Length: 465
Image: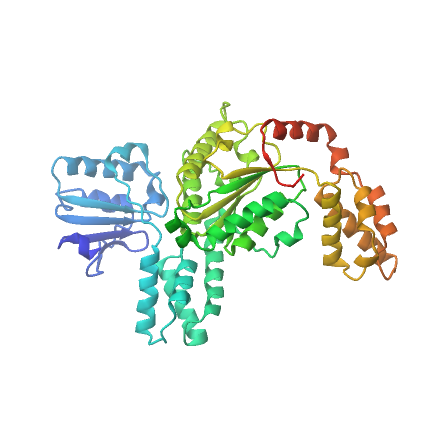
C-alpha cells in the first residue's frame, strides 16, 4: 500500500477501530466509529485533500443511504478537482446503482504459479530447509493453487513443525487446507473419491474417450507445446441409475486431480446480481484450483426452461455466464456435466465447442449386466462369486439399470445374512430380482420419450453396441 501511495498520507477505516492513520497506526476520531460520521467529518473543509482513504469491509454499509450519499458527494468533488483516492475494500462485489458510474473495479486474482513457487523458495531459504527437487517444487506449487499467501505460509509452517522439512507427504496437508477453502466458499464442494473405471460395467466408448483425455491432462505442458487444445469437458446424458455420477468420480481418479461439485441450487441468491456473482466466484475458484474436474450434476435442473418469463430470468443469466466460460476457458478445468432429461435444455449448450463430446448412456445390455453383477458381488461376496451364475442373472434382468442391479445384490446379501446362510446363491439373487420393479417398468413411457430424444440428437453411445 505504501508503495502505491507515493508519499501520500493514508487513512484507514474499519468497523472495530474507526479511523486509523495507516502509517503510524494511531487511532483518529475516537468518538467517530460509525462510517457515516467519519465520512461526514472528512468530507468537510477538504480534510481528504492529498490523502488516500481505505474503507475496509464496505459491503456491510452499502445499504446505508447516508454513507452512499456522502461517497457520491466525495466522488463528485474528485471530478471537480479534489485530490484524493477512496479505496473500497470488500470480499464480495456489491455496488449500489448510484455509485456505479464513479467506481472502477480492481479484482485481485489468486496467486499465479510463479508467485507460489517463489514464496515456497523464500520459505525454504528463511527456515534453512534442505533443498527440494524441481519435481517436488512443481507438485507443491500446483497443489497450492487457489490458496492465499496466508494459507500457503500457514501450511508450510505446519509442515515445518511436523517434519522439520518439506516432504511429498506434506501434500496431504495442502489438500486438507484446500478442502477447507472449498467448503468455506459455500458454493463448491470437494468430493472424496475411490471409484475407478474398473467399477463401472460397460460404457467402453466413454471409458476409452476419457482415458485418452487423461493422457493429455497428465502431461499438459508437453501436450500444449505439441499443439493439443486443453480438453474442455464432457456431457453425459441418459437413463438415471446407469453410472453417470460414478463416471465423474472415476474420471477425477483417472486424471489424478481434485473433484469439485457445483451445486446450482447454492448459486441462487436473494439480491439482484448475487446469483451471477456466485457463478463467477465458483468459476474463479475452480480455475484457481485447476487442474481439477468440475462436476455439474443434473445440469438440466439449473438451465431447463430458459427463455421463459418469471424466475427463469436468473437461470438465463447464469446460463449465459456458464456458456461463455465453457466457450472461452483456457484453464485445465475439465467439466463433467450429467443430465437425465435434455429435452428442455437450450440447444446452445449442446453445440460443438462447449463440450468436447456428448455421450448417451442407455440401459445396460446383457453383457454389461453380467459385468455389473460380477463387480458388485466381487466387492461384497468375492468368495461366493465363482458359484453364482451371472449369465443367468443377466438374462433375468432385462430393462434393469445399474442401480437396480446393485440394489438386487445388496438386498440378496442382506437376506442371506439375516437367514443365517453361509453364502449367497444364484437362487437367492433371483428371488430378489423377482421382487424388484425395474426402472424400465416404473418409468416405461418416460424412458421411451428420453430414448427418442437421444436418438434424434445423434448423441454418441457410451457403450460399444
